[in-house]
Length: 296
Ligand code: SF4
Image (cartoon, rainbow, N blue to C red; front, side, top):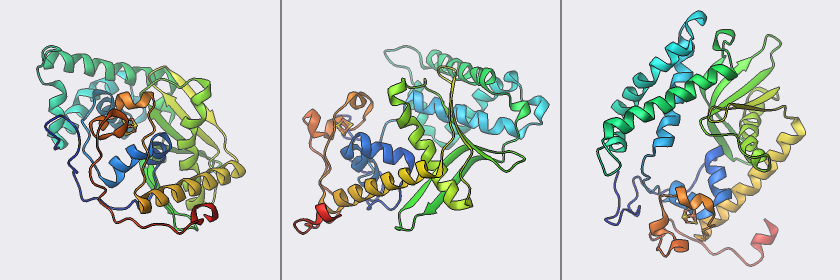
């Protein structure tokens, strides 16, 4: 990973390219802040690893791999013991994560690592109060899904778990290591699940029976049984979003949209909303003819 001397993020870590597909997280990025989407998808500016995101990766790996064990052995004790193992596995793949637990003014890294591992184990433990893995046999785990809509828009992403009932009904399950959002934000969280439901519907011709969000941070399970009409609405929304992304890609006009989420954005040093200057836009731009926006 590279960065500016000021700790900013102005050096791209891969070749800039126009966006070619949409995932739920990048769709959420664009809705939250178009400029952040640009920094992540087009400029591909590096971002610092975070303890929270890394904990999420480790916990997801535990919940995925626990199902490798026979049903009777899918116990909380076994799952907790897998936490340090999955952390070491991830560290071997991404040695740069060691910087998360380097000694610093916050204290010895080893102590912070121990507390962090305990926090991951608590999240894994909580899962056992929400679901019983000895009674589950997932059809798929960490399933990559991708489909192209008639418009050509490619939708893709990873489904944490897909359960198939004897009746053939599909249940899409996603684990969240944070807390369940307040009611007014629940629709945003379910949008990601409906995105997956739309992709699975297009791939298999069947609308998933249930979408299930499992919040390990607060111990909540949020479910939704989507209808075909709802998923058609999601498709319309994604097409409009993609059109807006393409307009911004062509014009180079990516606006910052400051919000409380800026506190967790690595790109403040190059964001105009914080007095920064974005890197030179790396893609060719074209001027759209007058009125094109209204007709689109
Ligand atoms: S700091 Fe805020 S406004 Fe600026 S790019 Fe990040 S999220 Fe957007």
